[in-house]
Length: 342
Ligand code: AQP
Image (cartoon, rainbow, N blue to C red; front, top):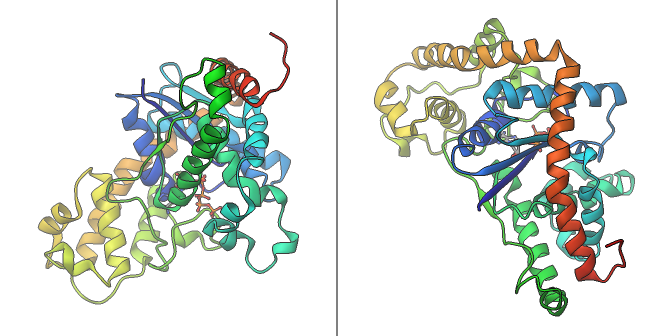
């Protein structure tokens, strides 16, 4: 069966980019796949997290998953640290992945900046842990935003090298020709890379110091209206053809957001608004965003009032994830040559 895995870090400020690039697509995949959706707290601590905030943000991402329409009974919703196999497999992958591969990761280069001596070792090893998240469940498909493409390629490289390095042992253990699948990224739709509302050259991001750069899932109607109205644009009216959005990153971004929210294409949005003033389009975008995000934010707040119920969902999800994970860890130990209890 085709299995989907994806994760979101509990680092606060969940935004429209996380929703359109990831969570909205997680919801859609439930119809056709067995899905595991993970709150990746082990990833979050690669940079400093306040312990109380980490707990709150973990519950908040869980609430967002459910408020957006993920069904934690039909699928699996859990937090990463409750399934120890993630850390175990990540260690083995640290011994498969090469320093050179990880050194080329653009996210590490951006996040580490100039101060490489002082970032955590975990930040460097982040993509190896991500490969472990996915391959622990031998997931075949991973829905992510465009920014994760390079990490998904690394996941394939790790799977491939493991399969080749241990080919003889995989066969000797009766586990076939290749143990890990070469996972396919699912990066599609009009909003794989939602940009900052203040700067069309930067991606919308949780860590942007300006709250006006992003629409948060918990923003109320006034906040959404204010942010969209203030969003940077150029003085030209909207074009009638998609080609006219080239070299107009801010206009392209807003049209892409609108298209993603209505499950349409950029061209269908331009068919409706092309030639018109930006202000008209922005008003329509405010109404649409409020209609789509308002109920999600309200439901998140309602769910957050009962942290015990959220924790129960995570515990149940982790129990079910562990059944799959334990099987993989046992196989991998046999493949690598680790003595284990039968
Ligand atoms: N701007 C975006 N457009 C489309 N998809 C996005 N994603 C993130 N930003 C955008 C996707 O959301 C999923 C979860 O992301 P994450 O929790 O790993 O966080 P991130 O990618 O680190 O998100 P941020 O907001 O950019 O955080 P900071 O500021 O810490 O770097 C992923 O599938 C991601 O692709």
